[in-house]
Every structure is written in structure tokens, then in C-alpha cells.
Length: 156
Image 1: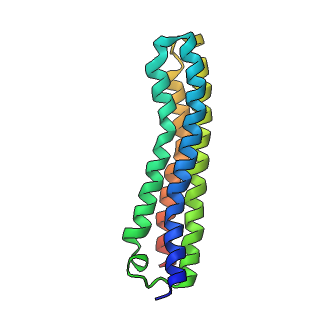
Image 2 (image 1 turned 90 degrees about the horizontal axis):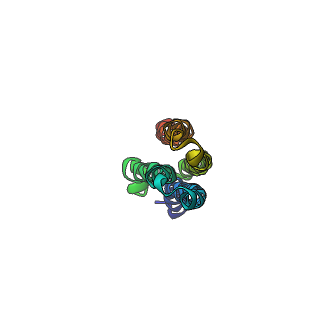
Image 3 (image 1 turned 120 degrees about the vertical axis):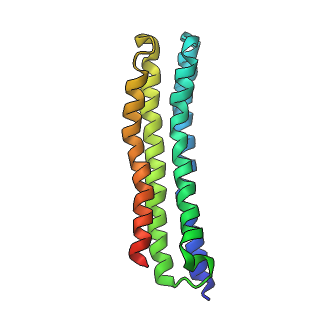
């Protein structure tokens, strides 16, 4: 049992969740701050603002899924027999997950904030289009899960 390798592997497993939390909080903060201004002008758009400001939250769940997968499914971490080379490979995968979730959530917040800013001018008609555009950005968070899981199959 190599405690350094095990520690690195556990640290790596937490990175996607940390990225999700960081990106989601940043994206939601930005969208909600724009939303507060919009609601001062047009309070009837509350439901649309709330929905759009909440969209970047999903990347935190994606990060949680990756963390659980790496800890519970990737057996060498659980039984403490992970080799240093594999732990470092997991660290690389954890960084990929971190970046995918952080950047996706932050960018989604920017897209949602732009859509929120247009709600009063369009009388809410831009809502569906904004959700669709935000889904494009979210795709990178979903791909972060896929790449992390595929990566574990490659390192064995």
C-alpha cells in the first residue's frame, strides 16, 4: 500500500466536484446578478430569470458523479492498492474533469446572463432560445463525465 499514491488518487477524484462547484457558483452568480437588475425593471420575468440563473448548477452534479465514480467504481482507490503511475494518471483525469465542469458552468452562466438581459426587451420570447444555447455550452460538462469514465478504462 502506497499512501502517497492513494492520497493523490483521492485528491484527483475530488477535482471534478471542485470544478463543478467553482464554475457553478461563478456562473450562477453572474446570471443571478444580471437577473436582479432585470427583475427591478420587469418583475414578471421572475420565473424565466430563476430558471436561467439556475442552469449552471448542473455541472456541480456532473462533478459529483465523476467523484463518486472515481472513488466507488475505480476499485484500486478503495482498496488502497493504486500504483503511483495510475494515481498520477487519475490526477490528469481529475484535472480534465475539473476544467470541463468549471469552464462549462462559468460559460453557461455568461450565456444565461445574456439571455436574461434580453428578457424585458423581448417580453420573455428569448427564453427558449437562451435555454437551447445554454444547452450547447453544457454539453462540455457532460463530455467531461464521458471523458473521465473513458479515461479510467484506458488506465486500467
